[in-house]
Image 1 (tube, rainbow, N blue to C red):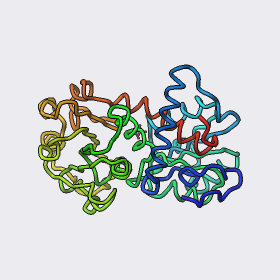
Image 2: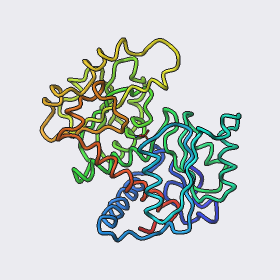
Image 3: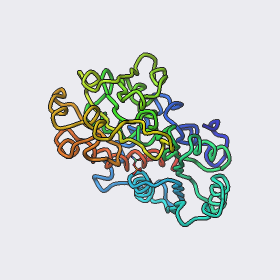
Image 4: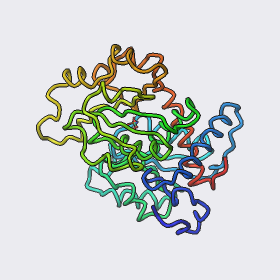
Length: 325
Ligand code: CP
């Protein structure tokens, strides 16, 4: 993150150092501030009493990778707060003619946005853009590094259900090695007082991840049944074939993976009463998650999507609107 107040026009934007690049460098108080503001904004929207702190602002969305939820959620969030938006995707752009990430970002910045929302396949891409532009940058997912707004909406959803994450156990199951969602969540959830169990076959479980997050709060597991003991919530992740390169497959077969690591109706039926099921999307139904579980009573997946707009409104408000609800 850039030093606070480095640029005059955003001197008031102390939150996140002026950008939202990762959860790792957000203090617990900064996480709670965005979640509290998201709660206020969600309630205000429900009452039809949302103010327009971003009126006259321009938010540019730069998506070098596909997205359904994150892109539309940021755009809706910006528009609900009164901002104008411009959506740029690499498809049909001058990237196909060889234009780089930085040249693309600098050219869009020259058109005067107040914020750039950036998704890119390279870890560190949003941070690189932030180091070169004069407006706020929000990381919408950079490679296998972080997806901070996803973790914030996940924490918001759990906090809304539980009141607090203190002492709770959240199990994250799936392609941990390639997951920016897992990385952001292990910081976010442990910083808010939860324990995180990461569960995957050895080839999808990056060694050393248990040294991240708040000390002693992250553990690694290779057996789903043991990881799920006493769980308060289970976050299922898809296998990210697009990040596995052209090498040999990291799981012998999807059918075997689904049998050993998928959340079937039978496995979900053995979860502790009240345990919640999350998924950041997109879901590979029948692989990591059975239809009946994705659409069943434990699932808060569509709540996550709804809350994503509130959390992104809060982040934009703090970074671009001076923090006013
Ligand atoms: N959760 C998430 O990042 O979904 P999208 O890829 O659709 O944005």
